[in-house]
Length: 254
Length: 254
Image 1 (cartoon, chains in turn green, blue):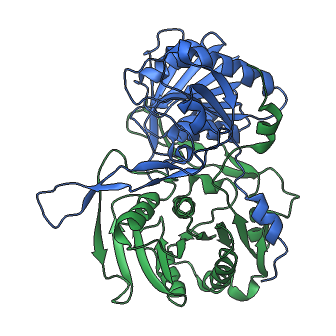
Image 2 (image 1 turned 180 degrees about the vertical axis):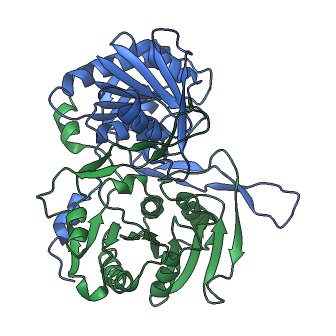
Image 3 (image 1 turned 90 degrees about the vertical axis):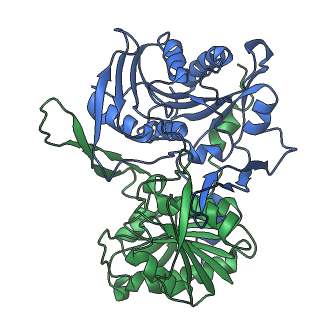
């Protein structure tokens, strides 16, 4: 089995290294990852400048690896079209340093890497640990991601699959299990902080803010799950049509 | 009524100017748009550098306008949190130079601008014309976008609304009408073209490629609609949970 791995924290991230170690137990691994961090780059692709890649031996002689001057979506496109002789059997994106629950998946380069694979009918998993620490402990993530990969390989035999997986940042023995849930409803508020600048009239802001959970009582979503010690899996779709609105208005007379 | 306008082709784009001219007929317009083109930046946000904005009089004394050093999503966040005294009644993103049908919406900064508004419960419309020409003729787009805005204002009284609107690049009198449809299923293939480089061993690629329609017989989607002379409206949702997979596996025992 051939496994393509990408991420958005760059080829140097600890989360990527951990994911390679997990994935080699399942098959032949090829890494195609960004040269520079691409957090919050969402599904950006490089249209305005050419992209380039170089081979890397960062993971030793047994793992083919490349670093690319673009985004996670660029990496997956380049891998599928130019670097791999044929479509991989599985795509893993991550392990991201920081969770990608709820609407955060919209901003996430990690999730975009997986979605790009799913667009080409490759079973694709976005994998994130709820810690931004560059030296985060991936013991729990490694253990549970193996189980998620086993599930994905089994299910994807019969249907296309794109999963958004988040792991809580707690010791392995405290993780209570894996739950298949929905994307939590919420949004970010109070998002900018003005920063001092030598020019008093200049308006410079850091993006910051506070996530507000629109359904704190609902236990059937990814935010509740990782806050309560579970690994969350949200199955994703690439069709963003709102079927409810569509069905209500499809015969509207303009 | 207060209308927030953004886009991804920058504050200098003809499509934005046209949209302002359409929108002033409906209410007070405030433009918050990127300083630089942001095509294919998807839902990127600026986490690694501060953003700044400046006031502009590009649209005259009656239209408040700002240009921002970030992405369309940054523009909407900054507008809602810092520039507007209260939430706008309507958000318009575009008019994009180039269509955003099918999976192209994933890569689109224009659509991301609208989705960011919808995350804050603002009725939000992504508007695109199927021509990349900087001097494209927006006559048909202007005419039909007015009708779409009227529809959106009516419907959004009773429910949240996020619409992805595409207009065919044909003369106004040839446009056959407006259809409410689904996102077409398709993907891009053969996506990279190697380019000559003084260093023969360098690997430089332009992203290019060919869109493949996975359902050419299906008339009930955005691609068919604009290819056949209709304005398409795809209602979007922000929850990307795949309900079919979720329902099948929610009780799976790991």
